[in-house]
Length: 159
Image 1: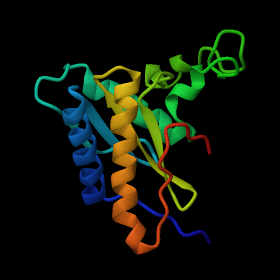
Image 2 (image 1 turned 60 degrees about the vertical axis):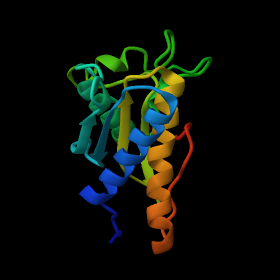
Image 3 (image 1 turned 135 degrees about the vertical axis):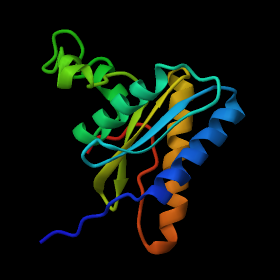
Image 4 (image 1 turned 90 degrees about the vertical axis):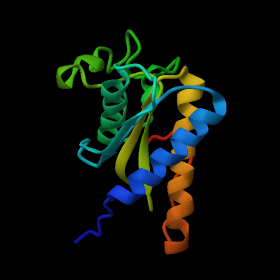
């Protein structure tokens, strides 16, 4: 039998608030999606004025990060990114009816070495999406650390 951790709404809200605060600080309008380990949204917010396409893109990134247990930009990071032309997963972005995102902005949520969900962001450039995503992970870490849980807080995650 294995103990399983599940994200709950209040934890997702903490992550979204942190991502929005970082986005405001760096001057970008983001959509942020937090998904469970099955890739289904727990919370999704689009900042006022953010692109209308952002929520779906953020969900796709979070879905991919949770489901494939890696930061989405790692699929296209040279030279060995598996989704690059000529590599083993080239074309994977057409999987799951196009929901599979292979560009920057999706990060798995790893608690006590287990992927329990994902966070996806859309609206900024890669650096901005990454800053807001890492801020969301850091907020979850600060929330869970007093409970004895360790959250992986970094941009390049591959489990």
